[in-house]
Length: 101
Image (cartoon, rainbow, N blue to C red):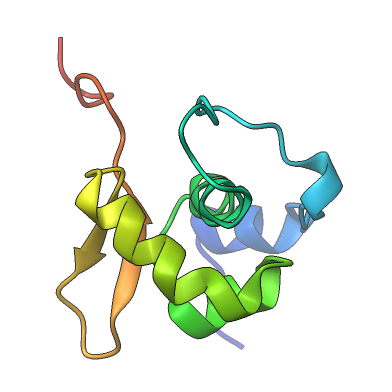
């Protein structure tokens, strides 16, 4: 057996948490957004990483309207499409990057 690195040990010992839709706290003003747009945006914010349309649809109640919501959110520049083999989407943070300063 190969010895584990500290990062591997930390990852294995870290409890896995999964957010339920009711435990997600909105961090973006829902002003001017439809319910489906708000759900998709909150989903991407809570994920913290890029998600495919299928992954978004599995996590939101408005699955049939997720494509439309993504299009509107991209038009408003709240979401970006990642240049990946399978199209993925990511919440675009407003303000300076965390490492700036």
